[in-house]
Image 1 (tube, one colour):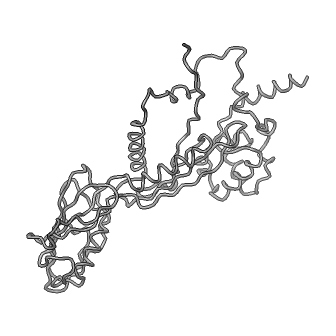
Image 2: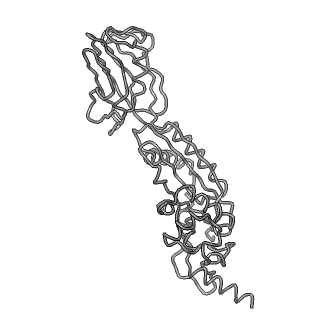
Image 3: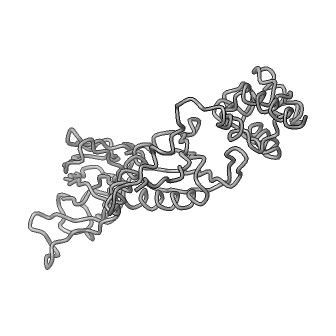
Length: 351
């Protein structure tokens, strides 16, 4: 029995926007995606990022001198409830994922900050300037913290039937997730002559304990692990069949331009950028950077464009819109030799 042949899938290119990438924010652009896949993947990634990434947080404290969260703390301006609320806002980086302990011990008039807390070796507090409490003259604040790892939100884990603990432990609600906000947008993008492919723009904001790159990698690993268990039969090797073949093409095979350049304005590609009727500022910036023809322009990536002297985001968007009206865009990676071959082929057909 002949082996069934499957149509290949479009493999997307992924790129983080370098200009905005930091320890707590990142914008990822994935394109091109199969039609409809932008929303499918965007939703799945967003939900996993918000609820499926593990992190570390304080789960309980012992504050010397009190045995419940509704007490006043001698010598401290804030009451226990306010101090605990401040403790919940600590951003903790855990290098091993193992539980750990921290401690704070301050005497005399002072402002107790997160940076004053002593931690185990594998634990680090990111927001060191965060204020925990204000201590009055003659006051003394001593706190022991228990740090644990988990996912999402966890309510205070009080033992059943015991309101007060023998060791004065106070259990607190914990937000483990390092991800604070996730948004995504889906736009249309071009592949050859087809214009209905998806472009996914994913923005991830974290608390700084994990980078956007790391939490995305974690989320994709979670999704992949879960989805693998839905494969009840042998996996169809789309990664293999979607790779462009490397063997030489026969004379009957279509030239690269038949697919890559399908539907594009070939004559326009080899013309000067003047044809796009750009603003003087954008035009001069491109010319000074050696971008004189439209083919040179479409082969630039957006990141490369932003690196051009005096060529900012406003100019980039202007050029992007002008090219879009001709069915063109950045990062098209078009070979001049393919364009010339396609033009020659078209001339022969018209004779």
